[in-house]
Length: 307
Image (cartoon, rainbow, N blue to C red; front, side, top):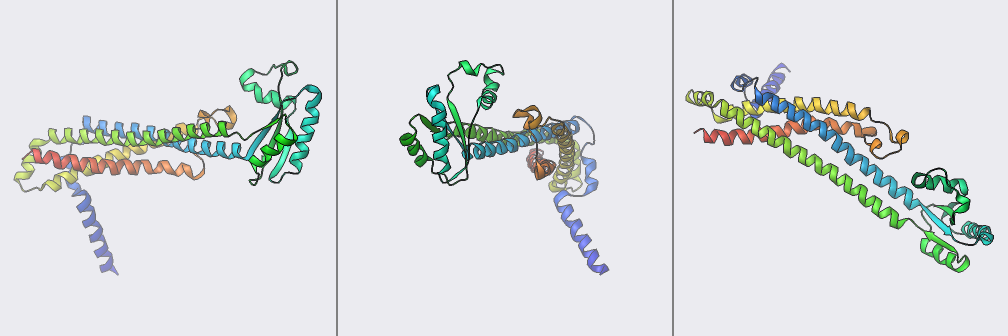
């Protein structure tokens, strides 16, 4: 058992050395300086922005699904008729709906309901008795409603009634939310590319500043892979640490944003829900992985120029 444990330890050590090199090689990389702060600061800033970009993408996805579900489930019947006939036509529409398959509930909106609908645009002090507003009937369907068939029945039996399935409102809203979601994921991609560029520049700067040390190491037999792994390991850890700090700061900021139910706006609903809070945990790992490949590529390209 002890021999098996020893073999496993040697295997893990070998794999770590192959990937990250000898930990003593860190002395080749400057522990302080502008490249250190540049890498940590850039990673923290990009991770902070990534938290918000990811929250935007997830929030708009939820918003699009909510809009589509809510507007697709309900239809509205608008009744335009003289006051003397309005009540009779509303009653006829409700009777028709009572015999229509696929209608879960149907109710006529009263003056208070219409006032509440118009309040966000026209204010609360509305003289509805002076406005020629149509009568509205709200219909909630159970998913099996034949909208076109209902529309034809209304035309035949209640000529003053017009059915609105909210399609012309639903599609632009869902498209807009989908566009915002795409914008959020695109912003994440740009943030990742920016971080890779900054880490690459920082690694190239550190390699150039230590060109003499690298040449001496070569004279005493050090391989390019040894030097490259040293820089790769140090910059990967710096980027991951900075990204972890930025992610925590971003999540704390998101946690203190007001809830959508409290403020009643879309931007106040920006945040994470349920297991969505676990997604930002991946940001430091992706930042470290991106720094690993960016630094490794920059290191080998720079070492070629030192020949």
